[in-house]
Length: 219
Ligand code: VGL
Ligand code: ZN
Image 1 (cartoon, rainbow, N blue to C red):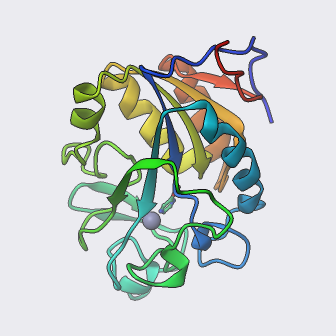
Image 2: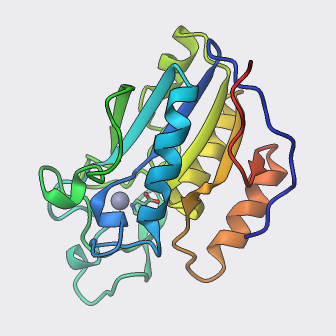
């Protein structure tokens, strides 16, 4: 996986947050929208968590029949693109339906330390990859306000999938004025038609730091 070599970044406990994106059963092997080796991020993320005071989780949380599901678009198959009122939308297999086991966090993920769980994608007619804005790029989730009110300035991001929910979250975080570090060894990608390389390039262009290995905590 391409990544810039980088010295370890000291973590600032009062102004840094760890954002753990969508580490849910449906994105792990055997799930509805399985990401290759998605579950490999779990032990890596568990080891990162104690280095942060502010651990935030996102949870993809769709109603049954969600507009991003190919099953809701007769004649269309998963991974095709359709036009929605807010723009182009990739269609996915059914995944992360509210209240189902597929929407649960991976059982091995340590969720105890999480201070905030932000659910997204809960409106039938609109998808939400980003932890900040839904796919219309306008409807906020409230995360910016949370981060600002708590004085958090830099986000370390990890989880699933690198090229969708992590990348969209990282780009929005930059646009909202936060520093962003994506921890690639704690991410896995869907990689649809070159989407991983495109997302990495876009993130780096936007000033997102991509690092291979986890940073060490400040002494
Ligand atoms: C995601 C596609 C659909 C993700 C969520 O977590 O990256 N991707 N829903
Ligand atoms: Zn989804």
